[in-house]
Image 1: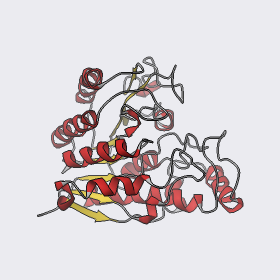
Image 2: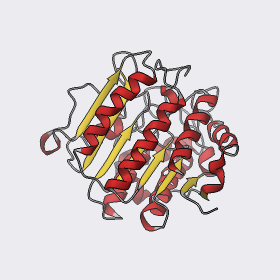
Image 3: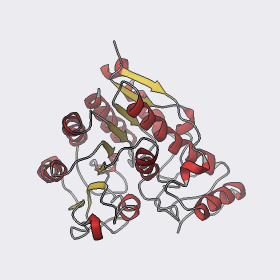
Image 4: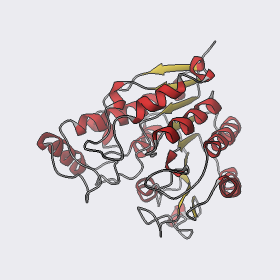
Length: 313
């Protein structure tokens, strides 16, 4: 059976996580892989490994000062890379750079190869800003991929869609004034959840006004609420042109996640992937790069990400 999607997997990205009972531990990759092996889609995947992103690639989005600080904190091996959510440990720089490299490998595969869709489970680190780590995210692979798509692959417009429970603030503010990044984010209302951003009136600045859509969801919102909100997201995307879709499909928006308050099932994620696949076929030669993002209940993330992969294949 021929492959219809690329899967980035392996120890290089599995090692990204934090010790001592941190919600973002290193068991997430294997929980997903155990589930995908039970799925019929496993035979339709071309599996590739990650590589460590170069400093030049990290600096597509991040400042030299931020890269220097992560390198130094990784050498020291203790403390925090932000205000207290993202611990430093020996090797955190290398592990984080492998995630970015894995996302870039996925991007390369779908832009230059015959298979237009890809998934990386340990990716979608959407909180890191240009000059800082944040919210379990050391480097922002989503934003580096946006820059790489344009600089390296000549793609003019990128659509970024985020269904993680948390607002993708690192991506949003990183490109808030960039009209070439079409941004749509469904997330738990920032009045109730970190990072507290993503209000309805944040729609882009300057030449980018109207190219950004934020849809806050109330705590307890379930699949029907998601489907209603998704219609708005899809209508928004239809009004723009783009050459690539990035999907951040964090599973922390499923009911029962230990640190969020939404109540979707994995069918919400399947619906998003299915509809984006149709949009991608219509607008951008089928190109979708999906990234796992958050999710701190292992059963939830395994099922949600597997459903995304099933739809992509």
